[in-house]
Length: 256
Image (cartoon, rainbow, N blue to C red):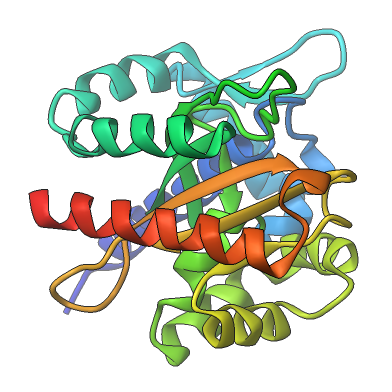
């Protein structure tokens, strides 16, 4: 039976990882203490104490001007070390290039990370107006963008429901933008066979995504295209882009 110290240690690791994920989700503008407390479900003094420890280790930094929290330099260094053993961007590189060339729009390679999706690579097409909605390294709750929605829809129902429950406090805002529940968005994705990002999430922008097939049937990676809505906002264009993505997703899967 685990000792009380072991249980506390494991709990601290889980709570620290949760706060790091939440900060990563908000790293562009910084995370406020009030939001970290709300979304983590932890008590404010507990959040403060863990953040202080993460700051001391270089995993988190706090901006003096507005007291917001950002990922620290050590997380960047860890990412550099981890990237050497992660081959997916190089495996998918040729497919990303072909999709960008064929569609003329921005292509994203998205990977699942627990309850989130992370953009791990990106290509820009030759259309003059670029839609750069997500930076490489950006993290979003699963379902909050086209690639993440495709990944979420591909999970077993029980796992999908658990993730939506874990991300509930973050997903409320996204559901208001969608104008529908995440369950409805998943059902639409399963019906279509691809994820569709509606234009009311980001004005004048639309997105399409499919998952890369796996031997187990549970997806880990997705390919997505984002473009000005007036370029792709009809079923014929959606279907054409989805077909391009499926062909390239199969090509990537064959290399795994």
